[in-house]
Image 1 (cartoon, rainbow, N blue to C red):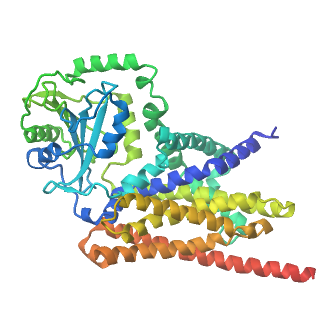
Image 2: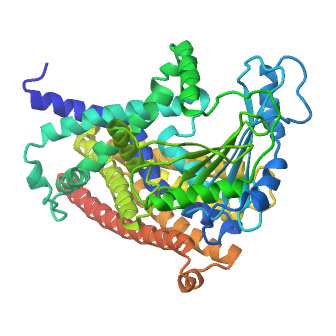
Image 3: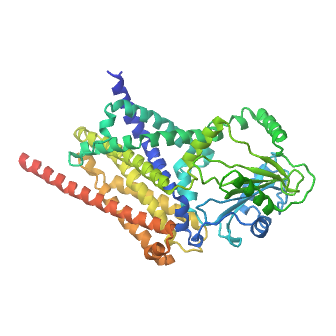
Length: 555
């Protein structure tokens, strides 16, 4: 079929990249934004603009919050079809209470799970969650959209397509294909070391675009390969091959029983009421044990399992921000007495590899320079895909124009939508976040509508302005949407100033980098978009003069 293996790899690289590049572009771009998802949350929710706090006292802050939690009406309604008979007015049997924070979170996330009486599945659990100010336990509005961690972050691995986990499957398949595209790209570019140092912006447009595509692909090649591979590993056991909960369900239950006997951490309630010892004392004891082993003592995750039952236990997990590997170093206590049950042993060699790969992907560590390398790697991936789109269209549009084909026009419009349209959509949700009234019902839904609405408008605009592509010329939508990006980015910074008073002089003077960093990033985005728009305009004028000269010579 192909005269050489290298040409076969070129075909594979081109068409795999074209078909699934639209998904990978979203994964790279929103993955880069997700590196600072908590900081974007604080920009989007002004009531959370204070310094990160440690895990608060259980007795003073957490216990009152847990005791007041109940599932939301929407969760109760969703549970009704899975219950025989009526739903209770209140859920009293607590499966677990838990609290979670990180070194970048000023607020505290709390979760409560309850047994469901008369559930068709005896293991059914209904959940409630909330957000607290850890300084005094004040509940914060839980209906605000966390634009960073609640929207951009799940977008990069699931496209917000939750039905049957469809988005996770699409992104997973795209990551698998991306690995093949990376290998085929290496085969295509035999002189890969030379391309590491090759970028000729003064050459013809097609040559400079290909140089930039090769450069961004080669420079961040280890990053691209690693994140595609580890992303697949992280979701493999949970979504792609969940054997323990499907084909091997009986074996999974047996493993749970054996694990409970060996660890002393029961999976089920005993049915015997019991009290709760001082949880703060358990937390303090866990921190002393970590300190004795020269480990940082920040508590990241606190779990109370089987609350009010004789089988209840308390698990204290370390934040683990002092290392790349995702570790918990859990210490577990009997809930009724505070007696130590178990300290998690050191991981096996395979377990340590898994912890390192997972931690390197999820980046819960406290290392700001490495975080910025993640951002640059993600943006390099986005640029690599974007230039691949441009090269594909530029190489074929004149041939398509001569044949009267509309294929290049369609691909170009989709490329504009995926590249500049995606940036516009991200800016659209930030602008909507600052424009919408704070007390607007279902405010988070309206922010999502702004995101998708902006993206749809970008698609319509790209298609409407794509007619020149059918004549072998550039689509002016690229230039026009770059201009729109600059306008929206500056508007987001100004709206943050107007609606909160936190302008750059204030946040920089106070050293409050979460908000200042987002504003500065928006201004840099606006500057890059302006420069790009000017370059594209200059090239459009030059191309128009060449076309006019050709037409005059023919006349």
